[in-house]
Image (tube, rainbow, N blue to C red; front, side):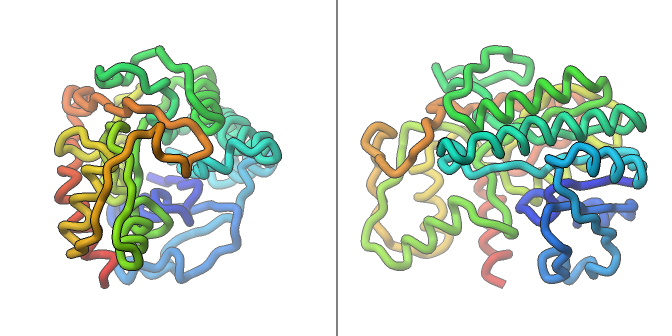
Length: 306
């Protein structure tokens, strides 16, 4: 199988590339930046084994030409604007839409032209975050609270309205080695501050990119198309709960003060309070669920301490 991974330099794209290489597939990583061997080499797979194509997904003709030339069997679309607060700024809104919605549509159209499968990575932010019931993959109650969420929903619609051979996979609270995330931020703050304030009324589950990459590769090997939710198992938690476990496992004694979203003033974009994603469809479809988030955190901390 030949697979293109967009956003190959990002947290998830990086791990998808390595997972697919492990399985012996023909992998082409793409990103807007020039190839940098240090980003892609993990020691397990020399970067010389990775084919790389610089690609701006907002360039419609470049997208269609590149995908036509490579002619993959599957496209795992990880490229996205993910800076949630920055997306709210007026000067960024157009480019956010071009990347997350228009760029996704270009890829979907190119996939359709060559009859390729597409895996689109979406987010819990497509929902309004109301209530306490876990969101089902086929729920249509969207109403995103922020620009980022709306742009990702527009990307979902571009995929499902263009293709039949698609997987739309919603994830939440992502962390991985190759990028910035909540864990790294909290550890850095915990090393230099006596206390940290963390919200305790936003509820969801973390997603470790290495575990997710395995699941996405599993999906790409099948024809079990549709909408899915994917995050680590281990129960629903708040960001406060997550920080408590991070400091416990890392060995930090920094005091953690729980606060409500209303009390926390550092965010520009509105965040959903209910990010509970029901993942039971994965099991019904025969996919192996992700390990617990506690186990994922343990493995992740060992990885970043190397």
